[in-house]
Length: 111
Length: 118
Image (tube, rainbow over all chains, first blue to last red; front, top):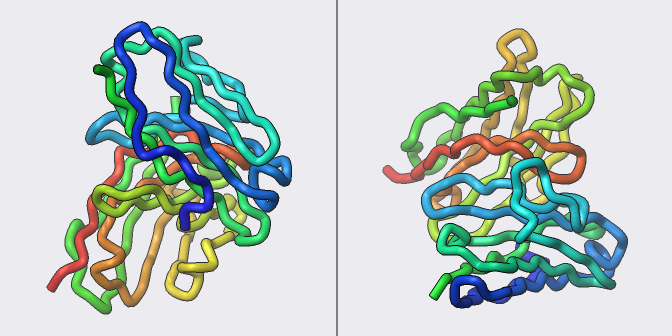
């Protein structure tokens, strides 16, 4: 059950900045639960990109940044590169459903 | 670094039980610092959390699957397993195991495609 809504697709030219929104509700993001972001390159498993709303694991370029406000969160990619073409998913916890929940996913295309 | 690897049949008949195992290397399932989760992704679709287990054997399942799911752990083999009963075509998916840091999933196994078909 995808209770976190993301735009199906975003695109940008190399070097540009793109943002992906993740909209939730008062029982997940708005309740204070952390938001995490995953990058899924074609044919591979998801990889943790941002944890705890805005923290980057070791090895993740600082071109990727995350933020959270109210019932939404955002992932920004600056200096877009061809290798950033992938699907991106947000994830949090929902207290009314008692489950970890994922976003609907966003496909990033580099023009 | 910790690595996870799923294994099990790639084809399961409708109404039968899907069984998968996740083998952990470079770390221990007995670590009290993590849960160990299963997550699935139907072809071309999004991600769905199935459930997790703690090394002690305590579990938490997605309510939408709870009646059909069993997750177990074998600390002697450093493995944890998934059983999903009464499968239908809707259960066809890539199944991932992942380490659950009490909030985020990291790392993930490479995933294994399970097709439900007669």
